[in-house]
Image 1 (cartoon, rainbow, N blue to C red):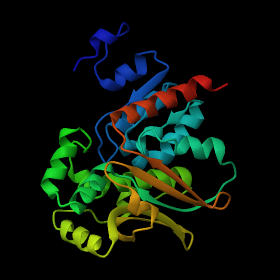
Image 2 (cartoon, rainbow, N blue to C red; image 1 turned 90 degrees about the vertical axis):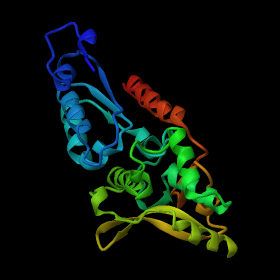
Image 3 (tube, one colour; image 1 turned 30 degrees about the vertical axis):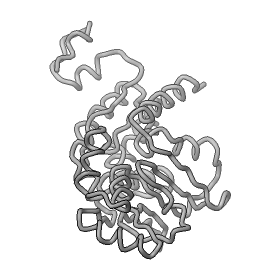
Image 4 (cartoon, one colour; image 1 turned 90 degrees about the horizontal axis):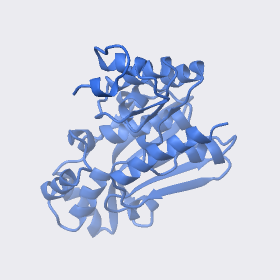
Length: 274
C-alpha cells in the first residue's frame, strides 16, 4: 500500500516518515491486534513525538506500552485516547475520567470478549463450538486470529488496559493468569445449565498485598449473578469503588459500528478541549 497520493511534501520512504511529515492534527490508529503492540506502538510514538494527538482502538500498543505512551503525550502537550480498546463505544474511560472524580477503584470484573461469550451462550442451547465460532468469524466479530479470543488473550489485553488506566497498576497481558475456552468447555457449559448455573469467561482484577492481580478464566456463576445474564455478543463491566460502591456498564450486542463511534467520541473530546 502506497501513501504517495496522500503526501504533498518530501518523499516518504516509510510509514513513520509519513506520520512525521504529513502535517495532520490527529492520527487514528486501527491496525490489526498484535500482543507485542508493534508496529502500532511505533506509529503512535512517532505521531506523539511529532505533536499529533492519537486516537486508537488497538488494544496491543495500549496494553503493552501504556505508561511510556501516556507519559510522552503529556510531555508533548497532546492527547492519547483509547476509548475503543475496551467494550467498543461504551464510555468506560471517559466515564471514570469525567464523572468519577477522586474515586478509588478497588476491584473490577466483567465479560470483555464478545466472541467467547457468544460461543458459550450458544453452547448452552445445544449449538456446537464450531458453528458458533464460524458465525462470529463470518460476522467479522472474532479477531483475525481467533485464538486470541479463544485462549483469553483479547480479554487479558483489555483487562491489562483497565488495570493500568483505571487502577494505577502496571499489569501487562503476560502477567495475567489466563485460561480460555475450547470445544471441551461445552460439556461443562451444559452441566452447569442442568444445575441452573452459567459459565462465562470472566476477567477480574483485585488488589492484594500492594499488587493488582488479574485473571481471565471460565467461571461457573449463580444464575442471579449479573454476569450470568449477559448473553450473546454483549459485554459487561462492574467496578467496585469507594464512592459509588458497585457500578455496572452493559453493552448489548455491539458491532463494528460501536467501535467506530468510540473513535468519533474521542475525536469530539479532542475538539471540545479548551
